[in-house]
Image (cartoon, rainbow, N blue to C red; front, side, top):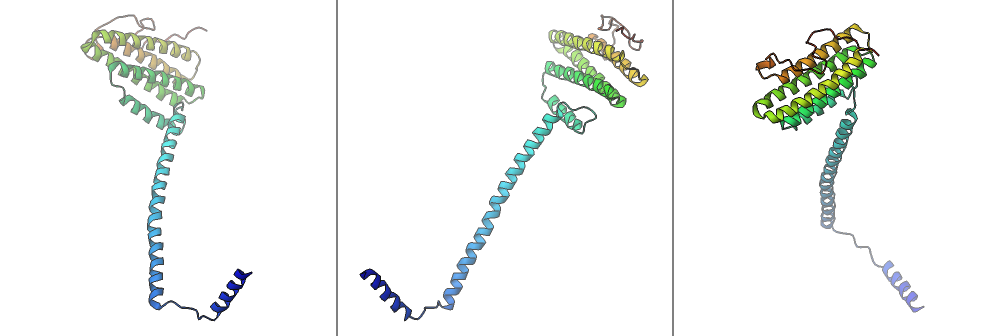
Length: 237
């Protein structure tokens, strides 16, 4: 085993050699290199971590908002998410540009408010039901104003918009009439009666051509030509 003997002989010779210690200057230079490497690593890593943290937080925020908006779409006035639903509706309203699109938006919201009123009456939240019916009236008033404005600029489009408004109010009238026959609370009955009257007034305003919708128009209304403020008979079931 000549190779093994050669290595043993080399090891014996190395044992007789004194160890070489680095000079003080070499030690200082070595420590400086180590400290420089540590400092450079410490300054780079936080930047990467902060960037990733910001991106992760932004992604989580987007997912959270999207999830909250989706969850609030069907929320009711007694839900904690309902204010978010209203805020999103305002955003959607700004995206409706043409008079026809704006009318469709207001009619959609009027149906939503009516559904909310029905749900709140079922839960005996008369106060919230009254607010929903008030919001329903406001949506129909806005729709009537759109029809009036369109009549001055585009009579053909205004006629179509008026027809859509009349159909929507006729549907609301049927729902309100049925709802009025189901409740017994005096406050709720008053709110429903007021909503029916204001719906009729909105339709009459849309049909008129004079200022503020007053020209004595007596077109047939979806509730049988009943004037505003007149009593509403309870439907027979």
